[in-house]
Image 1 (cartoon, helix red, strand yellow):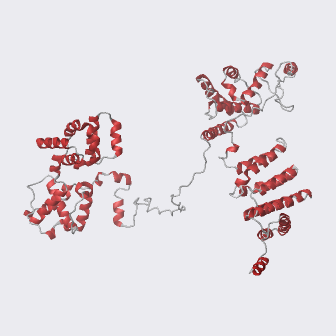
Image 2 (cartoon, rainbow, N blue to C red; image 1 turned 90 degrees about the vertical axis):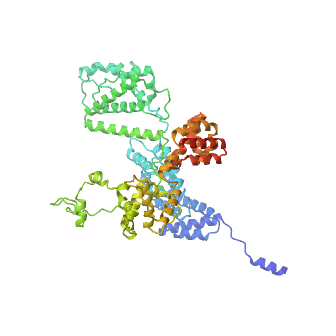
Image 3 (tube, rainbow, N blue to C red; image 1 turned 180 degrees about the horizontal axis):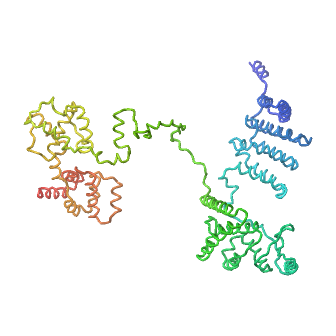
Length: 625
């Protein structure tokens, strides 16, 4: 036994373990084959054959890709070879053999090592694959890598020499991230306080006064730093001295940090500068646009603005008047001033919507479709109808495809007017419709059953519809079963004959069985309306009984089938016990309607064990009757 155990144990081979050097070498060779043949199949085969866990193999393959990319960069190969490796990695992520962040790591390595001219080619590849980066497989894993990569590129680029490249990077980020992405928003409305305009702060350092005499002789007034050598200067109505120069350029500090405008001292200095007229139209347009942006911030509702930053009424009125003046100056400023003014106004109005969205916490622009919503059917354009059908023919008559329908429709082609017509009120009253049936039910008229109108099916159908609209008996429950519709209508006719104003003496059927059935039917419906009307609780009785009920109203409420919500509502409406009792009885009367009788109220009192109140109410009812 022991020998067989040892032999069987010797025949069992231990499981193969994961070996990093062997796996890396195998993946390196497979990567070269995949790049050479431009297919990912060698990598898929190697990934399935190498032993080890999936995570171990993914990390090893990621390292193999970085080594392959390093070799290409050291050998200074073309960008096409580098992009081929990155494309292979993207396919590996899709197939599930690579980590999702590997393509972005490789892109960051390449852009850090290559000069700017080759980075332009690499970034073109990044731009073309923006839809890939936005997919669920790559977005969450790579958005931070892409943002860091773009910021590193912007730091290396010159804003003046690489303007187009910088703009491409900004547009790529705008396409990559959704509008609701808060990482790219200035949520707290912070200002770029580092943007400082440098100018001469002392008159001695300024050359404006020294050159003033020379420029006057040459017939020129040029403010330093504002016009080039080739531009033809124009005369200015305002003498440009150092005081005006200093005040004008100090405005840039308010544009840089608008919070200073809420200070009273700064505000007085700010008001004196709006009469300034600049001769350079482009520069004047630039300054006026800065005014509008500043005014919008001062008037706008910003969530993170301090509560102390509030404009006075005088300041608000001045800003409103000055804004109109600035728009007027922009419209008069060449070239194409009116169009530019309208465009600026539109952009600033859009900015107001943007600020409101940020104040609301940046809600998502995507509306979730409800699960129970019906699928939208595709729109099918209907074939236009012929002119004669639409009433545009020579007869101006709408054809309905049938002679009688055409006649009826053209009685009044206007649908709304036809609906409002008085002739549409064709529903008869109960007296008019059942007059013939009531006469036939009178035994003195001696009408045989087979000739009565209640046997007509068309008459029976119309009678049911009329009873449903105008008679309360139609919806009252009854235990009596009817074998046919004529039998049911005969019973209803007898009931209506007793309720409606009798044109003559009371109708007698002459048949004992019918009288017994009618009496039973009337008893089931709480007798006739006249009898019920005598026994209904009146407002005067409710007023008297509410005074007696008083504090016991809450005991009686459940037996009057009052809900807990109704009881709470009565308690909240009044604190007076008598008023609560009265409100309870009035609510019960409204709910019960024709069943709000003295008998039902006495029954409820007995169930609530309020026997004294029940006896007093019974005595009052007998005395009143």
